[in-house]
Length: 81
Image (cartoon, rainbow, N blue to C red; front, side):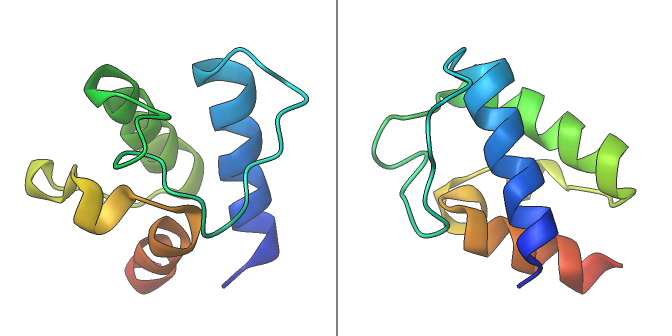
């Protein structure tokens, strides 16, 4: 996966969602299933992905199967470009 994509996602989550700019989020760290981000934050993340990477995220994809870690999310973004 693109390291740049993963880094951008991790930075957004740490700064804007968690409000912890120094938090390091591993590419395979569980986001949703661990409770790190909630359903409201998931919407913010989806909008960030759409705006930043120019890809469309379907409502049915807003779940732990697609968005549970940065690797999964980067793969989804890559497949849409």
